[in-house]
Length: 470
Image (cartoon, rainbow, N blue to C red; front, side):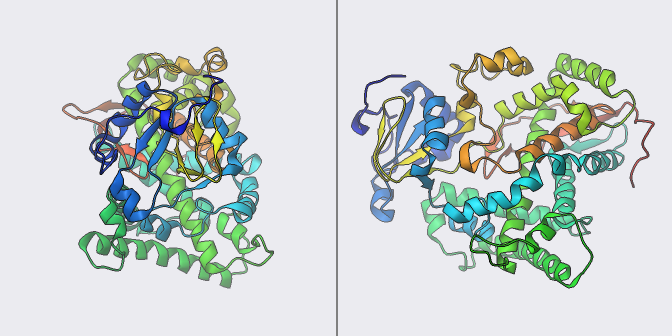
């Protein structure tokens, strides 16, 4: 860090194409390119190239922030100077004006509405839903069975978030909904990666648009049907849909079906995919380090005995929490945060000056794998999250859920869900990674494995104090 000012023209940048900027590098190896940019300093200029600048009148560069102090400044200390950058058309179509994309008074009103529902006692009340769902899902596995761990975790977290949102079991169209979500995610990535793809209107019936529209309509119709049925019902429910039906907007008016749909769509997609990916990466790390798994097994036996975990048990499952945090460090599902646009010129703590209209880019993937804050950053080591180790490094070197006014609303629930699922399954099942697989992370809307991860199940018994839920 420095007290000297660094003008924009002096901010270091990697060698890139004059016309296409860093786009080819980002498309070819997004994650690797971001890590290579660490060597250029605390703030790195990523030129967008003349084509993007001329066609879209976008700024000439992004500014990648590599230092926790600068990250804190943009996301927290001076967050009012920064607004979200535009997103691809398909992302706007999916999330609408849900809390993920709004700004200003509307966004603050939305956060105030949802905050109590996703924190405190309201969250812990869902402990039995999570553990019973995990136990019921695990009951379908038999000894020696090969599973796609990513798909298993996605189906499990989808069933949980559906109950949380709508107060009912997910019906037989669960597979269609999962396929539709995947189609939407693929198109979002394509539009982020390709200027041409983002300029083609969604109504033009090319194959990828047809696949997206067909799948997205399934989800949207299902959500709207749930809204209509609930409006006709007088039976009280303790779920997000009921909360939205009784809520008012920032002007005091009841929410329309469209506004409710936007919020439900946001929580449905953001509320299960990120946790499913976090669990998938955690299982992958665990099966590759038997010493960590053995220590976790000992802790689970000591704390839980033969009963299912509850929220009350979690403070004593300290090593489990360290494993979860280390997994989120290595493979943060939110591998990049929405780019921020500076309203006026701003000087960062590092000394760099960002001009008005410049785009500030923050990547948890990049921060979490910086050797300045995490020595030997690619090594899986839960002890990085011992109390002593956490106190020794900057707070904003680790931001798996973002920071500031746009920090993830569902963080408390996601952590509760992840820890309870891990504890429930790891107490009763051992997993083994099948041979011959090459596993790489793929940065899409979330950070997910590029190919399915196959694991073999080894059953080690069930808790005796709770029946398996059918």
